[in-house]
Amino acid sequence: MPKIVTLTLNPAIDGSCEADRVFPTHKVRTRGEKYDPGGGGINVARVASRLGGDAHACYLAGGVTGTVLDSLLDAHGLSRTRMDIADHTRVSLAVHELETGLEYRFVPEGPSVAEAEWRSCLDAIARIDGHYLVASGSLPRGVPDDFYCRLAEVAAGRGAKFVLDTSGEALARTLACGGVFLVKPSIGEFERYVGQALPDMEAIAVAALSIVREGKADHVAVTMGHRGALLADRSGAYSLPAVPVEAKSAVGAGDSFVAAMTLGFARGWSAMEAFRFGLAAGTAAVLSPGTDLCRGEDVEEMFARVARPVRVAPAVE
Image: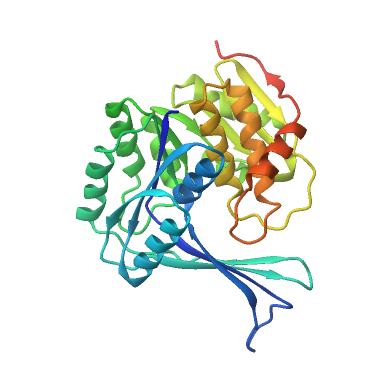
């Protein structure tokens, strides 16, 4: 099966725990502490591997916390390539409040990356074979907004299909460069990208199809939480309703979607089936508390429950 290579520029040690109640000033006693390797690309690699794919995680890491991240990745049995930086890897925390069922997420901005470090990262990625290159997550301080443009060029030079999941200026700059096989923004990220609210599925479809028409990306998948998701490509735009479930955590739902959809493509599935598989994995992820991401058995159950896509806009002319 084609290898999926992922890159995480701003990974994290993802901690999770539960507390009866979260309140200010006084100590909040927690229990059930758990730590997992995290960050967009690492999560994608974890899920792709869990679902039977051949995935390899590349990431920047530094300091004492970088060594801890290495050990967590090894505990998960992930194939990996570490790229050293001088600054420390960040540590995030998700606290599940039992009294209300709410989840509180604390996410640091992460390390500062020197120019020599991010340029070395590009060189290292260019030496790793893979049929799909997934760039997922935020850019750390010091990395230029056009970094993913440069990465897309590396992917093209290696004959790999480039998958993008980021936001803000990095998303805008990369789409402007083109060469993206699949891009997956959330609806909030997508509205910020287009610069206006998108009140209904038709408006989302028009905006997504414009990206395809202009050659910025081959496939645009917009995830919308309880409203489902939309996929646009040259054959048109298609919507999928959400599968109704009781959510326990939103951590990694988007990463699970990207992992499963990319894996579907890697298996030679049609775009529609890969889209359905992505929604199934994203839904399965919210069933697991904390940083556990989706489980294979849950993905299969959700996949059986995902509806067939409904066409909401015609093909690109």
